[in-house]
Structure formats: structure tokens, C-alpha cells
Image (cartoon, rainbow, N blue to C red; front, side, top):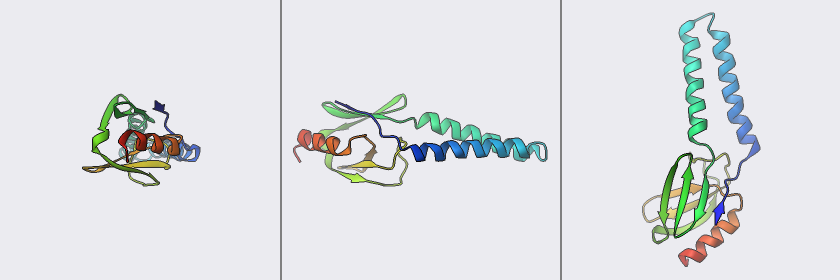
Length: 130
């Protein structure tokens, strides 16, 4: 079963607003100070790359959890899962939502943002037997 990533509209607006602000500042500052203009434009390029790299991910429940992040995948074995709980953790995770599920592992944890958190957690509990 595939769980599409939840997207919070306000968070997308905040990220796009930051990119817009940075690009306008770069254009306005460039005629005054080329170095500052290039710095702003460099930051803009970095923000766009982050946006592309952190494009919302899908999470699949198969024999393992496959967490797709852009073009890469992170596989989590069910035997490594200790528990799963709702979270609003502000740590970086590849999603445009703060409504997340924290999957506690034997070593560390993973954050995912499925649209239907309750169904995802219950499906995970069924598959892990916890």
C-alpha cells in the first residue's frame, strides 16, 4: 500500500515566499554591490536545489517500509521498528508538512508524513505485531 505525502499549504507558501524574497533582494542589491547580489543569488540557487531535493516523498508498506525521497529510497525493515507515533517534530524531513509519524527504530528514528497518519500507524502495527 502506498501512502502519499501530506502537504501543508501554509508551509509551501512559506518556502516559496522565502525563495521569492531572496530573489527580489538579490536583484535589488546587485546594482549596488555585485558581491552581495551574487551572495543572494547563490542562496537562491541553494534554496531551489533544496526544494527539488526535498520534494515530497511517498511511503510504501511492503515487506519493508520504502520511504522514497526524490530519486532515492530509504528501506526500513519491520524487525527494526520499535514503535510508531504521531509527531510534529521540527527536525528536517523530506515533506511539506509538520504532521508526521515518528518511526522509532532499534538505532535512531525516521520521520514520514503520510496523508492518513492513523491508517499508516495501524497498518504498521499490524505488520510489526506491536
